[in-house]
Image 1 (cartoon, rainbow, N blue to C red):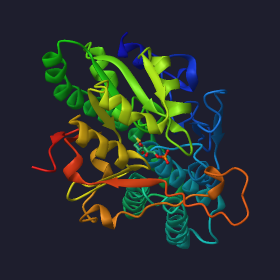
Image 2: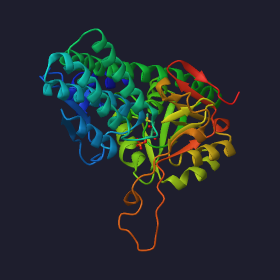
Image 3: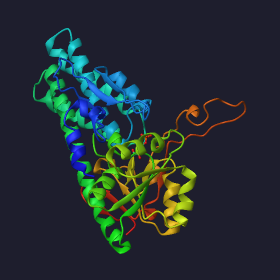
Length: 373
Ligand code: MRU
């Protein structure tokens, strides 16, 4: 088993679309340099039965893909957000304005309007507005430097490509930092570890490689991983549909469990560590992640199992003092109850917040942070 295979698989769109390993580029600019670039995203709604790619030059379709979870996972929607701003810039540059002198000003106003719509596609993962803001900053800089709208769109295209490369590098650094605390645990147990994860924080959820699964891949490369247990992750099934699919393609032994089985596994001493991703981390270390993560953290605390959160620095939001400030997305009832029952209401929050006190360490590309200490 070698992560290098995954890197090889990442060379080129075809491979990213699934020819090898977990080659899951979620928001890539078409390599063919068309007049208006295309963004390519794996349609995660179709997995694991079908590997379908969405390709579009329409920023509204990217927004729709984010809203409908075709592209999902905090870092992936961050890149998709920046890519959507790029597509909006191309569209607006094509449209032009009556006079060249007003073109740039009108372009800037319209681009900000589109950016607002893109950033509002989903509220919890701060990476989305982070990606949109990075794009808006680049656009503002280009326009200030006297670039035309078309040249500004091209600068955004370059940014999108850079963000994809940057995200993979960040995830590999997160993976390396995250494998470090696992090594002494494996050494003490004198065997590779069993790791529980919740939701999908893998290659699919990022441009490539993953955050929580990035830790798994880095640790597996060092012989530290015996098996990954993946929570099914009701109601959307990111664990059941995506995580085990991705792990099996990477050659990491994976066992799917229902969300209500983690307690009995921990009670039986069958989980050595928990590693999850995050959608937004408050200044005090409280971390929002997929609904159900809090329950896993409480269990881990009870059974003395280390609980790690792996995420890029872009997931930290110091504007949120604590987890109570993090907006929690509520999604459609149909995700929980396919056929409505008269008189029955459905509550479907997509995320919960794990308090810092339950987190053993937060792992970012910069290193390992112990928020409770
Ligand atoms: O609603 P989703 O599927 O976008 O939620 C994703 C998660 O909660 C992930 O665990 C989180 O974004 C980390 S992804 C690296």
